[in-house]
Length: 359
Image (cartoon, rainbow, N blue to C red; front, side, top):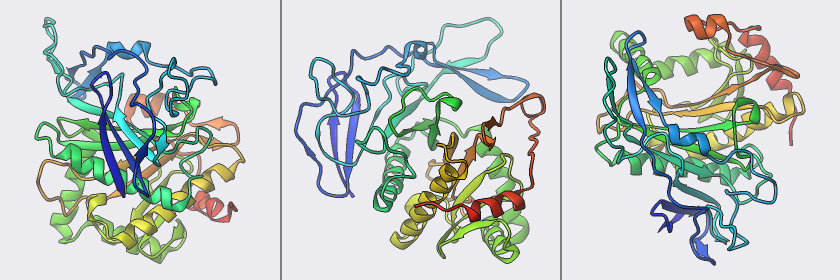
């Protein structure tokens, strides 16, 4: 992996990644002036968690016209985008409309409200210079590069002592609120451990303490022995519809060796993980013959300098179509009680996904 670092005219960082040496053939652009961000966090006393507020994001770019793509390389200097022309495969830059910033000021006091600065970092990851592609449609070697990029960004952000957790993710599809169609994802780095990860860590530590080994080891062995929910097994990585899936076609992509972060994987393990990830995404697109809207998250251990042998590294994919043309909406029991309802058993849907043919 090759990478080159730059600073945009508005002061934001830009890093270009390539499978060959990076070459830039135009000035580093920025699509406008820097946006003043004053994010804050407010404590939710009933849920015991923080809620982010970022009012400046109301005016962020929303489904721009086809002739202007802010994530494509700049071709008209009069209408600059986020990226320069040149030879590179992927780009990472500071989000112009961040939900969290490292220099967030203290919020104005509000009586009866526990609030603090929205401290963190938000980055955009552009998967390809091709505006019409998809993550699953990328060549296998470029999907592998993305794993390297995610690992590199996690390590870079983890060096900042103010940051405790790094979450790479991709929202795909206007159905789930995507405002730019160019294939891209994001990375959020938090100054605390978010509630989903905190709960998972508590569960995994309890399992490790009781059994003396990581949960992932037993999970992989049990799923292979059951043979009904594994969709693809590449030896060092596999995809599976977990037996406790909350979404109808939920898929997990994970290494078969228990590790806590992408950086701990060997080269061959990253190759296998990339192959399985690409296969999973292509299956989902081929399932109903449409681009499947989904949320993809990379679940790694915290970056606070401690070891987390109990943490199960995995990529979770939550598809939002439960049948052709039918969305999975979070309704009363999901939103009001946190109890998901799945319309089908995981074993049935894993069998369907195994039968899917794709190029």
